[in-house]
Length: 266
Image (cartoon, rainbow, N blue to C red; front, top):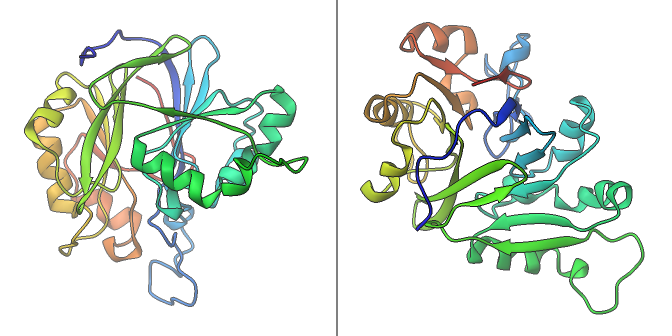
C-alpha cells in the first residue's frame, strides 16, 4: 500500500483554474444576484486546478469544457499529465484540446484515473483510440491507478484516495501536503485517514441546501473540522451558495472561498 504521508516541499504553486459547478457561474439565462454580480470572484469556470512543481512539473486535476480557455488565460505552455477525478462531462469535456500539447511536446498525454473513468473516456473519445487514426486527433496514455497505491510524476508524489459521488466511486488526490477533493458526498473512514497531516485542503461545497451527490457548505466545513488543515479552500461552487464577499464573512478564519485565478503556495 502506498504511503499516506509523502515528502513535503515539492509543490511550487497551485492555481485554481475554475471553481464552479457543472454549469459554471453565471448560468445561461439566470438573472439571480450571483449570476448578475459584477465581482470577478463570482465568475466561475468549471472546476479544475493547476499544480506546478519545484522541478518544473505541470499537471492539472481534471480537464473540463473550459480547459482551452483556462490554459490560455494562465499561459500554460507545458503540461506533463492530467489527473482525472471522474468522467462526468464538466471534468473531462476538454480532453480533445490536449492536441496542442501533443503537437508541441511530441508525445501523447498521460491521463490518470480509475477504471470507471478511463473506460468512459475511451467511449466518449472513441475516435482517439480507433485503429485508423485521422491526423491531428488527440493522443492519450491512459493510466489506471489504484486508490491505495501512490505514484510519481516527476518529483511530485501523488496519493489517490476514494470518495463517493452519490453511488459513483471517484478519486481525490493528495500531492505532498496538499489535498484536492471535488464532487464528494461521502468519504469512508479509511479513505479520510489518508488526509492525516495535510496542510492545505480543497473540498467541494456546492450550496447550503442538501444535495444527493455533493457536499453542502455545512458538510464541507465538518470535514475540514475533522481533518484540521492549516488552510482550507472551498470549490465546485454553485450560484445557490451566494455572493463571494458575503459567504467569505461567514467562514472560519482558516477557510476561504476559492475563486478562479487564485494562486496559493504551501
